[in-house]
Length: 187
Length: 191
Image (cartoon, rainbow over all chains, first blue to last red; front, side, top):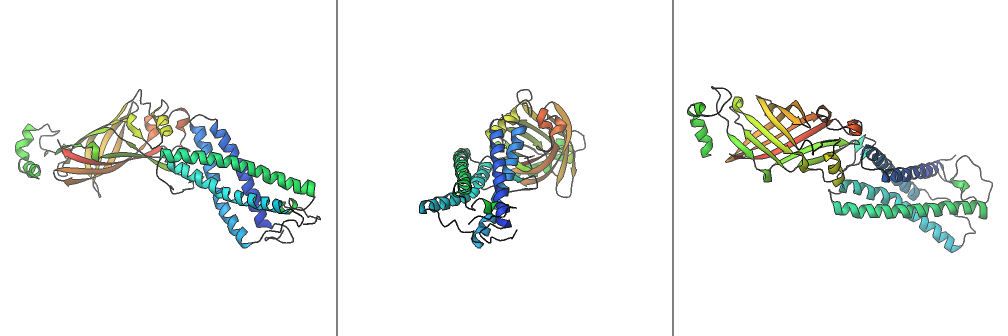
């Protein structure tokens, strides 16, 4: 598989970043939902610590991904798409990119506001973004929660759209992001 | 300043009258910490990241003169309920029966036994009673006279599990470090 995007397909870098980040986001929801149901205690501390480490990983990968995206034009969308579909796709992608940064950043700020510095898998500690502040924490927490719902909705839309392209339009939009397949379909 | 020279001029006269551990020792100046200008901080580590907390309420009776270590004596009493780590949830957890158990053990008490000079300042050896357990804990500090009072800045490191601070799940040291650092900066006023 080529490193860069070519022949209407995403390359190895774009695909790896896409799927690794996708898997980490699934893990983030699982960790957050499990932790939310737990009382204060060591188990909750562990899960939230993992959630933070994974979140910071996503933030770093998102930065890499955005840099890659700016320097490597993605394959063009199928020619037959209606203008509103193109617009919807572009806005969804832009919002997803935004959330890849906004989710970890608000989470990081939440931790800072609650005086819990963020460690990355106990290997190093990130600096605090803001000082301890209960009011700021509450505000950040609601923002983080609302954005997580938006992310959940947009990710669902993103998945449904990919499936629609694959099964309904029968184009290569899904296949070009899948590793180890050779698409015979029109782009 | 007056008190300082007074003290130097009268050691022998006072030696007989003062309550001293040994008859030969020079007297130590007596102070207590001014709570408004003193800080007692603790640094713990959880999930790999350090956090800072403070004890808002404590008393410190400090008898100390750099040239009269034999007569020096610290007596520090900390109200554990006054802990504050800038997070209500963590504070509640730390006060609970599984950690400090402040309902049963409301105070920590540190009393010194001996003092020695170190490269950077002084070292006190004393016993800390915390959570119903008494153990020796050395404290390193610097003493600075700032007439009419003085400053005392120092640190101590202790292992929380030596005192049973952390029961059940909280015995875990992978997620909550055993080692806790205590840092203090006391503004001393003459008694």
